[in-house]
Length: 145
Image 1: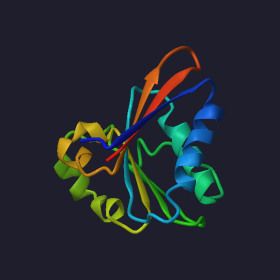
Image 2: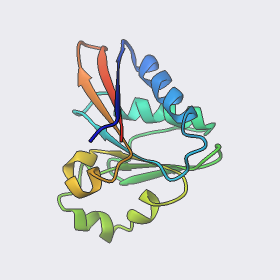
Image 3: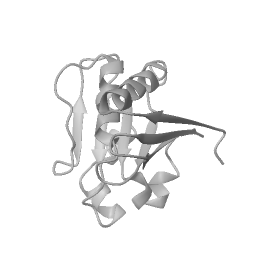
Image 4: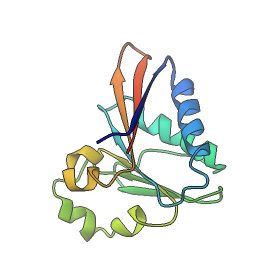
């Protein structure tokens, strides 16, 4: 059961990034957080993670790990593990690729398409749901468990 849900509306990728940065700043004393991102392609998930990286003080380019499955960003207050499950068909593929060591590490793990695998989705401490509301407008719901 979700303990708390907050709903935000952003009107640009920059506003989506700023929201991600704010969330990350609130997690600086919470290593080991697992965050699940849910939403259609192009809904703003990677922009949100880009903001999270900035909020943690990570320098450099943040991009989608759709083809690499994971991007690791270090150099900030905590490591950020950006995982994308879009191309995986079975949960066993996640474990076969060794991704669980990042999910359960002492950084912040952010998992795009976490809802594809209910067992993994259930382990997320925070769920962020992205919905289109217009060309650049997004509704972003953050649920804390």
